Amino acid sequence: MIRILIFLAAVFALGLGFAWLADRPGEMVVTFNGYQYQVSLMVAAVAIVAVVAAVMIVWWLIKSLWNSPYTISRYFRVRRRDRGYQALSTGMIAAGAGDGALARKKSKEAAKLIRSDQEPLIQLLEAQASLLEGDHEGAREKFEAMLDDPEMRLLGLRGLYLEAERLGDRNAARHYAGRAASVAPQLAWAAESTLEDLTGRGDWDGALKLVEAQKSTRQIERDAANRRRAVLLTAKAQALTDSDPNAAKAAALEANKLAPDFAPAAVAAANLLFKQNDVRKGSKILEAAWKAEPHPEIAELYTHARPGDAVVDRLNRAKKLQELKRNNAESSMTVARAALDAQDFSTARREAEAAVRMDRREGAYLLLADIEEAETGDQGKIRQLLSKAVRAPRDPAWVADGVVSERWAPVSPVSGKLDAFAWRAPMERLGQLIDSHEDEADVPVLAAPAKPTKEAEVVDHPAVARSSEAPTESKPAVGDEQVTPVTSAAFAAIPPDAEPVEPAEELARLPDDPGVDPDDEAEKSPRRFRLF
Image (cartoon, rainbow, N blue to C red; front, side, top):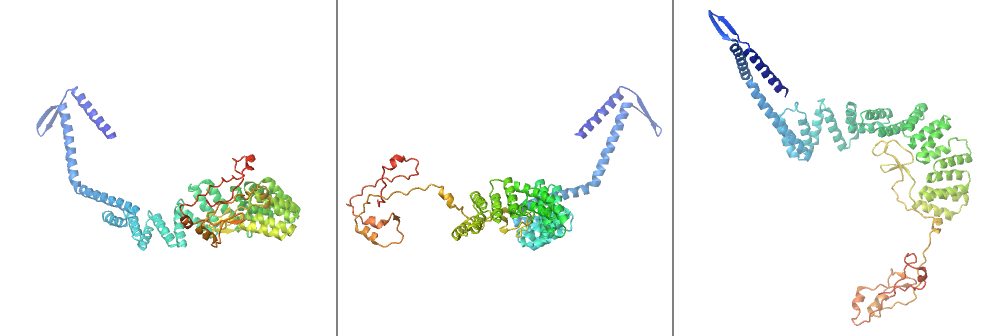
């Protein structure tokens, strides 16, 4: 568009120039070789313009002829390159669709038309074709060759990483992922694998740096990054508890600040504060975590914050926790345990039974059994409670990838995944909710229907008699009588002229049927079980 405007402006200026010359007549005289040439000014101007145009045209023709070999070769080279890219595009589509034969054919065609050093995608297509053909060794050689090219290095590391994962060589996979993460930390696959490697080796500082790099590149959200940092700082605090208590305390406090509802971080921070006689600050941390989510480790550490306290003092601290989180099974069980230690059996029993009503699980019944043994020693009740505990759902525990642990761990022992442990009930045993005798007493019991008074009419036929005389082991019982089922053979043996049996009276509805009038219930008499 700009060129068109410039051309139009030049034409317009040239026209104005000729018009200006036309309005001002004059003559131009040229003397050359003894001859004198005289022309008008307009003719001289037109002649000059024509000469310039002719020179430009001649120059263009000479330049075109001079460059014609290069132009022709460039035309064929561009045509060859276009054919090569077309083959490369078709081959990549075939590789994505899983057509190994077509991908290999197009890779060879593209390699003939385009040099691999000019287009790195040819190496990728060859590697993909080798994978589709099952030639994993050839594919690994292609990926290793990519490591020498800075532009293809990350692609080669990715391919080698996937091949190592396929072979189950986790060390090699983490090695390639670490090299990729050092060059490009924004790669999710490299960062995650490297993070698993660092946490598996206990390099918490390196893992924290990697998480910070992930956060800066916006690979993970802010909340997810804070959660990971809290987990890593808690693991670091646990590792440094004995060797460097001050560094451990700083890490635990930072972890608790990032995730106040994370129980392991709160327990680690409070435990280190208690060891340094800072009971007040440690108790506040545990109270805040207890309000967010009650946890038995928090309760255990809170009630035993001061080792020299009496059992009554521990009971009072347990009651303080209960006030922070009322109507909670864990709060009731905490008070019940402390009351059992203080020999306050009435409080222990009341709170344990309240815990059973709120959450009928194994630990609540075992606690009731301990209370029963300490208070009465009634072995019958103890065995009854233990049997309920066996059938009840298990208590929550730290579970990760099917592994149940009593203590929290930062990584899964099976997959090596960070923050895999979750506080939940294990799934090894699915228990049923157990109703206690006290709960059963509140449930109304439906009275069984009275015994029928009317005798059932029985078909008097030899086949039926023989079938009724045959000894059977699984006959349904109605009252005190045994009813023999009538088989198809017995029906087939009944003569056509047998008298029909009158239909039985209508069954009385159950007493819990809302459609029954209580006054009419006494007037209706239940019937006996009839064969027909």
